[in-house]
Length: 288
Length: 276
Image (cartoon, rainbow over the protein chains, first blue to last red):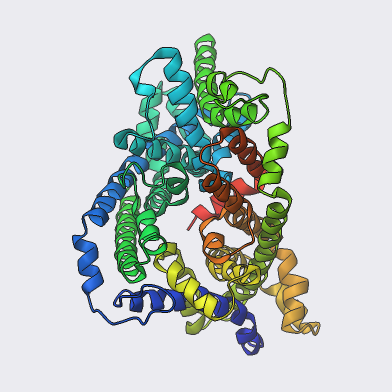
């Protein structure tokens, strides 16, 4: 297709121009601004070198958010994947109505994170705190969004509810790719379900694990919408995940330069964690 | 055989219970949107949360609808979503096609350059983006659509790229010998062949843009999308559940309708996107 070479610039230009103006230029600007004391539109921005990075890495609130985000991500990756994989196993057993269940489990995913947060705010504040507490007087139902420990788990529950259906779809596709004969042969040999799970199903869906863990990792790290609508980081700033923390540093406190430095640290962490994860999972895939 | 049936039945029950838990938040939203006569302490919602309304009333749905100016929010969301997704599809398909068919080093480099943004979190560039776009005069609906185009090309180009690699080149060569120029080739031959993957990409982009909150929040001043309307409501009225519930319900109806309509394609889309 030699003749296409002449039209190459014409076809690539629209996508490339939009991409460069919207993603690349602001990203580079962001790196530059992280070395300035950018505070808003009409104030001159002075070069401050690594000052913002120093402030970020010694700031108690930022470090708290960082630890919280790591903890949140770990809990979420584990819970989402256990739940999603179990759901996938359940709905591929071939009973009637499996499709209906798939639809239900995936449902939360088409609703945006912001609205999901409001839905669950109602569940925690009214269904739990008012209805269930008044009916049982069990302390366990109280103050889900007002107690910092419970509010953390509330966030995990919402995120798990949101992501599990999506990951389930990926697991289902992988499970359905397992050759029928393998499982039938195991049945003939009298293999128990857990034996089949360990020796046939798990090894054959490792590729799906690479993808789902990658997706849950990066989505948990970047979670903002549901955090904003469910807790706004409250009580205090104890449930403020990194993405929300950076957002507030700029939007509410007007310290854009600092927010940029925080976000570059954030970017480097996500890039490092996801690349390391993909590298190790790929290596494992090849070995198994 | 009988034992197998019992086992299957137990699995069915467990799955049903899980489904019930999954769907219960939506049930609460639904029934509490129609409850009547909410006095100052909102008795019905707070104590009879789980029950169906004693009388079904659209009163609060109507009030919520008016309060957030839902008609406008709906059409703004619709306009932004439809236009952005159409643009993303066209420019990504154009780019992906020449990136596959013109086999040069430049193509390879540009392809990886275009998909690299999948690693960049939105937080790292949102503030400079707002500054830069206001500088260009793009802090409006048109600019927002342009920004979605810029953010959207990575995933869609990636999906189209993978698909076009699997299409034999012979059809395009035949078209070329028949005297088609490259624009005709693209419109008459490539676009029709891409149809399945276009639907996939469109569905994924629709869900993302329709639900997106942060970008419109940062860019738009006095015009509201649906998520913005919901967020504004929560700012003006501190916890008025009788108004919250109906507005949440209104906001999820369009996307649920879309989901039931496009379900098959959504599932295909996720599986396609996962096979990186």
